[in-house]
Amino acid sequence: ADMVSHAHAWDRQDQRMRTQAAAGPHTLTYKPLHLAKMTEPFRHHGRATWPAVCIADYYGVQRITQAVSVSGTPK
Image 1 (cartoon, rainbow, N blue to C red):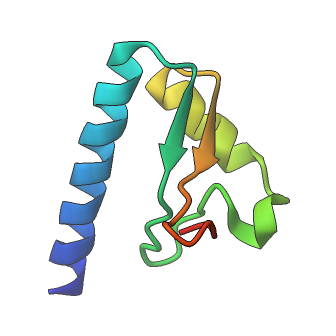
Image 2: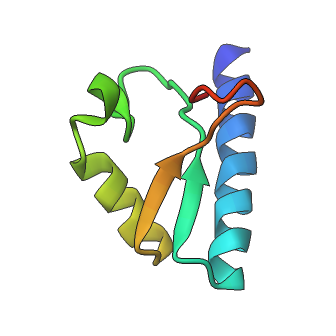
């Protein structure tokens, strides 16, 4: 059940990011989706930058930023 939930969340985010990238922005927001032991782009408080570079390349944009919640803190 957890994997199905994570897969649906990933599919929704992937579609959102593809739609945004197709609209032309140079920066996309990314909400961390902690799946098993997959490397997240903002792990270690953003010190590990290579995952974010890979994700930006994948979507054809210059960079990604971490999505921010309503309270102003990263999601």
